[in-house]
Length: 381
Image 1: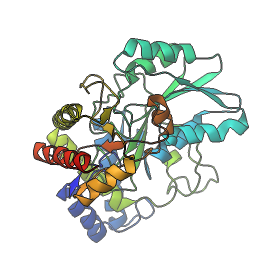
Image 2: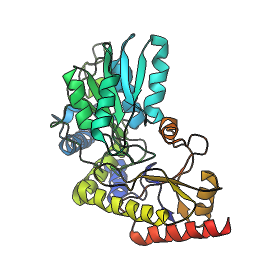
Image 3: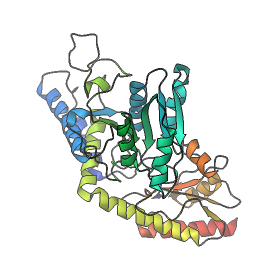
């Protein structure tokens, strides 16, 4: 199969991820931080090593700033619900995934409101200006995606965060599509919180994610329970990572996440990004030559896009196209991609789109095969 659904989760995983997870099950199967014996200490060291690597990759102040979550959605919920109080206002973009929009909508009963700032593809000045115009006196959080999971459109998150700092407003960035692909430097930016998916561009297993907090804490947590520390107290610790982590962690998954990040570090984000963008550009150029292929953005260039491309074929639903591709051994994702706001932006809310997202393991021959199958589908329709 030609797998081009990496925006949902990367596949295949690097071999080192699989072997590292198996080794963790064999040799580090104790509960980390809950006991003083050697096996528990080895498990705790595995968690620390992953935290340290993540802190290094994203230039966080230290490993204590990295908390493990189930996924990026959980990290976003922890920030949104941990920062905001009744009566607060939030600024987000009009390209957001439901991992941002649904938590914001759920807070409406607390009189927490939000404004969606208009993104202008290819014009960062206009985008930042729209974020500025959306600010209100009670704005307490800016939360936005780094790159749209539907259109690949990049937001100038560093400039948006600098805007937030100017007005003493916290900024959280949804890095689900950018972690491991686009450069992110927490130290050199005004970003306060990074929310990461471990199973996408970081090549870790599903069920892993991270919340990286520059300040090392949240105003409050939405999760309380056992942390293996300060067990004499009924109060949740108020510092990361324990503040955001309760219960037994996913040690094999976190070990696999560390191995995935090591894979990215070895290849480098720049090499991966350049490779994937060339594949997306090859695909875009091929589709642009076909009558009846509908492309919604300008040709994706590195300065303004991430390696994700959505399209439609005239006279066919996105599900029909994806089904025919699947029959030909090609995996893509049709529909709304859990991001109705992004589809409303392009006018594709009713039909959705066919989304193609390559990884480090795809190649130009696979893209040519994809284009050949699309031509066949069009000829038969």
